[in-house]
Length: 299
Image 1 (cartoon, helix red, strand yellow):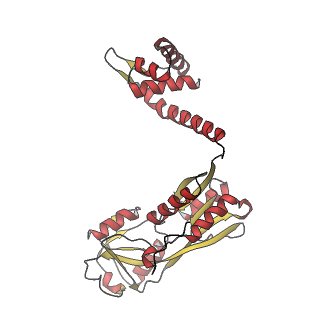
Image 2: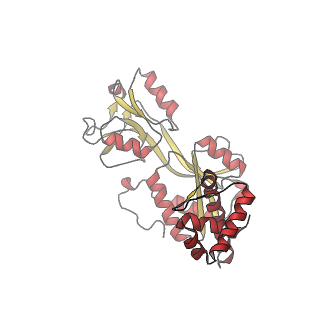
């Protein structure tokens, strides 16, 4: 299997025509047809249904398509990386699944502008998954809760959050300073199964004899905030999350917090990790709380 055969294959898929595909590939139609025939012979199956009126992929062709695209993409990326004056460096980042999306997006955007030579690849997961990926070398660093074992790990605090009650801004609770836990009994609630403090929250509710009515479960915080704002139900959420139409209130009897930071293997610290650490520790993680909006943190 040769690269030119894959380029011919993709040209046909994109143009849906052998003649136009040959023009796109800068070869004659017989040359293109011969290359595709060799590819099909090697694979042992036709890739196209050759109808008089139209050309379509066979089942084998549909399965082959993503592989061909991936191979061509990687070849082009390799060529670009090798020929550029400043080679691209890659940082494998593990991200806590419940991390605030908007703040992470702002961080990555500014970091990319300041370091165009660094590409970031993101994998999100639960704390145990992130720790395992660090141990296996599948990620360079993780944004997560402090590791249980710190023998071989570095940890730098980024921000802390407290678990609060999210209510619609028009709710009768919204103008109060705090909500007694007992008043939550029997109310409609959204459940976040990916929450790191799920066990503690469940235990606190059960100990107080509080039995909320779970109307929806989701591991997508944006969806949970939208549903809260729409009045579908209340939700216990980190105070770092926010959305228009949603008010966060403390609950008397609930005092649960978390610290989030960067974790990386001590022996693998390098300039990539250091550069990202400088940005992350300077990031305005709680912009809504700031008395003066800091617009220059990433400069």
